[in-house]
Image (cartoon, one colour):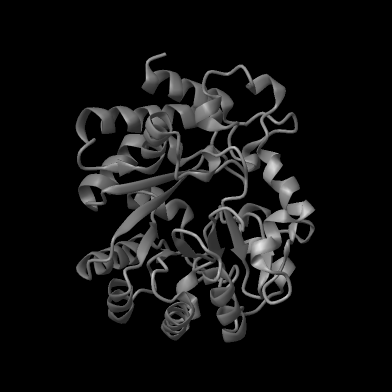
Length: 346
């Protein structure tokens, strides 16, 4: 049997009601075609049945996009029914939904609360920062709609964390972003995501300085009331040798991406024809990790020689392959070193 893994599911592929400037997934229409995309109930059922038949402690369904709420509530109601049908007693199932929040309704809130979904809300900080990149097709900023969605989640007691992209522009405002999420929006769970490609990537220096500024604020004031995923992952790695952050793992095989058409990929940053691992209903999910291409991808995480003597290798694991240069070294390496040295006092 394969090791425990989660599913990152793209039920509507790259479809989205927003047009965020830095979205890396919008280009997938070149692979899957233009127009609307939606996973069929046939693929949905086969995916649920196959995944839940694999013995593991927790089966985690992570619904992403694009904007996954475009699939509609009936799609997720059907998904839950399949989970009930194929899960059986003693099978632990969890669901997360990563959303921009702009399409959420009271019905959505009731559903997510009833079935205990964890939500990830994409918000980049105050309006002046968020609306700089996250806007709709007409160019209007989405901040007010996102905050309305967040308030709806809170009203229905749906737990959620903020998903905040840090790029070459927003990296200059670490405390403005952190304090806005904490104080103005009352968000206690933060996740910061580095943007290293596109037109305005964050530099290594910016990334290190951003993390240091947020860490100092968090460490001196907020350890008991705010959870920052990266900081939690570092502490878990130091204290228990484990991490909930795939970038800190030594192999790239913690999850599988399932596209709307049932095609299987090893990572959402590598949804390309050359990395297609199979198709739901044709290639058994349990055997995907044993295929040559999957093993090759997992070993892309192997650190380059120059990293082997680094005192922080056990924390960064040479960083996510998407951040690697041709040499194999992370583009953010110096920023990571500055941050680790600062927060660990080395």
